[in-house]
Image (spheres, helix red, strand yellow):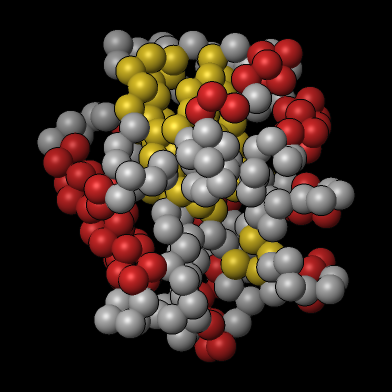
Amino acid sequence: MPLKLATWNINSVRLRINLVERFLEEYQPDVLCLQETKCPNDAFPSKAFRKAGYEHIAFHGQKGYHGVATVSRIPFSDEERRDFCEKGDTRHLAVTLDIDGAEGVRVHNFYVPAGGDEPDREVNEKFAHKLDFLTEMESWYKSHKAKKNARMILVGDLNVAPLEHDVWSHKQLLKVVSHTPIEVEHLARVMKAHDWVDVMRRFVPDEEKLYTWWSYRAKDWAKADKGRRLDHIWVTPALADTPTAMEVIRDARGWERSSDHAPVLATFDI
């Protein structure tokens, strides 16, 4: 069956619920994974999602910060919320989509710490947290690796732009958090831990620019086009041949009062 799955750092789900509703109506994903929902669980706008046809909802949120949510037209089960680094923040959510197959498809939704401004773990606790978070992701997925046929999709704002053309200027951003060599190395180890496949780069060659985030600081973000690819979609080897399409919905970055991230939409033939 075809599966349309989207990931989007929404930067407050309640503030931008009208944009989410617009996206769902125009692009009709089967599953939408949101990050930075900034919403406690008891205030999550479930009613709006159900009205839009997304009856299956899971969230992991807190007031004012972080938060992830997964909404779906496809039933899911086995919800999991892992507390990485034992910080008590809400940065991970996993569900299993009830898709053909005994084990379904496991979808992991992540919001990796941004890491602050200074790329030095000795002076910047936020950067240390980010590296520790990625290290724990690596260890956790190494423990999954025995399940070689596991059908898993990992999405989210991973806050690392790993490749040279994932940023507007490789040379100028080498010492800027999100593109430093140590972050890139940590993310590469996470990918290797379960032989994850980078779905987005299956459709856009490594030598071509590919962005999902443009800073609010730019007066004309589209003209300046100083972007970074911070949002990702990965699959395990068991699903490596299933992606059939991928699109960064750049237009959504230009919607009124938008998030600084654009949604990423991928289609799979499961």
